Image (cartoon, rainbow over all chains, first blue to last red; front, side, top):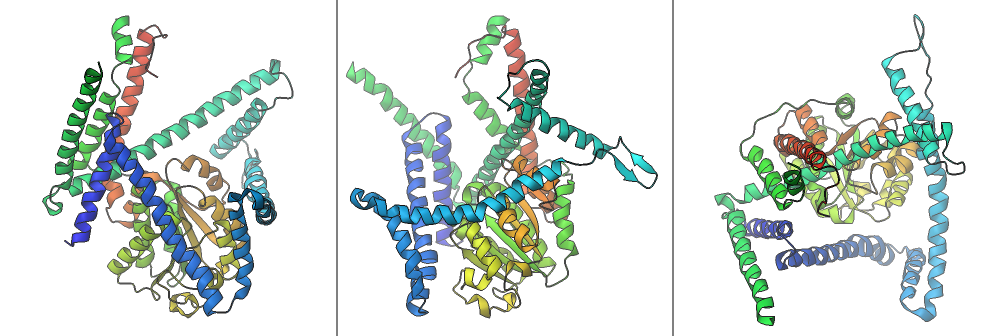
Amino acid sequence: MSTEVLIGAWVATGLSLFMYSFLYKDNPFFKLGEHLYVGVSVGYILIITHYQVMVKKLYVPMVQEDKWWLIIPSLLGLLILTRFIPALSWLSRISFAFIVGIGSGVAIPRVISSLILQQVQGTLKPLVVSTGQGLSFFTLTNLNTILILIGVVSVLFYFFFSLEHRGIIHRTARVGIYFLMVSFGAAFGYTVMARMSLLIGRFDELILYASPDYGYATLVLLALIVAGLFFWERSQRKKPEEAG
Amino acid sequence: MRDFARRMLNFDRRVIFLLIAIVTLLPLLFPVGLPVRVSPEVRKVYDYIESLPEGSVFLLSLDFDPASKPELYPMSIALLRHAFRRNLRVIGMTLWVTGTGMAESVFAQIAQEAGKENGKGYVFLGYSPGGANVIISMGQDLYAAFPTDYHDNTTANLPILKDVRTLRDVDYAVSLAAGVPGVEVWYVYGKEKYGFELGGGCTAVSAPGLYPLLDTGQINGLLGGLRGAAEYETLVGVKGKAIAGMDAQSATHFLIIFLILLCNLFYFLGGGGGTTRS
């Protein structure tokens, strides 16, 4: 096994255990891991952006391929940085106006078409299905259609605030709440599944790194962190005594 | 009894963390091999790839970063293995800057395993900033959106991209996404305008939000979370990390259901108004 893989395994194991140490309580190991995560993420983004964007998409086309018109978007980009200079910050509005204008123009028709009109079309399904043997009213597909219809209408009633929720409006809105509760329950169930998957993924790697091939990285680092937490806890208890 | 129930509602929550850790670890160390049932939405992605003729263009956008690796990495591996086995022309890319290195490594690893060469059997285009704008740009001119691939090869000269000038030349695209930009963006700015078929894969958190797109046929299939990945691994016939994790997934779900029931029981036994830890 190459040295860089081994170092990578030890670093990954250590950082995972640092983060999990928060489950005991907030502590210096967790803080170190947290700060490292932020720092490394920013550094990584800067390096990738520099090479993949600034060099490959700006410097090389401009200097080596004579695409000098790229200076215009570059200037627009630089104008955004004038936000840091109060006297010149008004210049950034030119770039923002450009971004908002182009962004809205591109997004509004596409989003209305894709996420509103087509979703409405998907909601408005026929309740009566024509089959070879005539018209069919009560099929399994119809049941879904009816559920979608009741759900959409009742939830819309729940979010209808122009009329006081009394009588039929109150009862319909109440049905809407049940649909919302089911939806929240499903979303929560999926969230639990996602979080457990992340835990399983980390544990899977921690088990792998606990093997002799990786120098028992997980076991050694776990012992060190537990020992570290023990001494840290003791020093924390001593502090109030000394102060007293 | 009431005091006991109230005491139980206030017990140290670190006990629950410990229980979850044990219940997760045990099935990983001693797998049971619970069966994985394939859902129709996952099968549709598999069937569509199966139906593509050899040499069809398959675009796989890995729109996630290492934070979602446990769920989406196994999906990437299973999909790539399937695509390479079907001898499709695979185009890889990412819309997430922090996922670039990981995306490149999974392409390189599975391509090497399948004996595919960069530029001939597959290409990894890398990252380009802009999200939706990248998709629009690829729809107009793929060579302009990505003049070079991740390894600095000129895309216009790559054999694998011969006759692939825009997204209209893509037969099937799958976005494995942990958020935005992801599947929705690929649909709104890609499929609807340029007409290729689109499938999706996502973290379990995002899955409920994507089912409406599946229901209306805006995406043809969906792999949701670790379960979706395990189902795809089952279809491809290669046991990977997702199938290995399903025993632990089931065990933790059982524990959580049990704890929810237990907490409700203690809540009612405690008179319903017990003080709980915030």
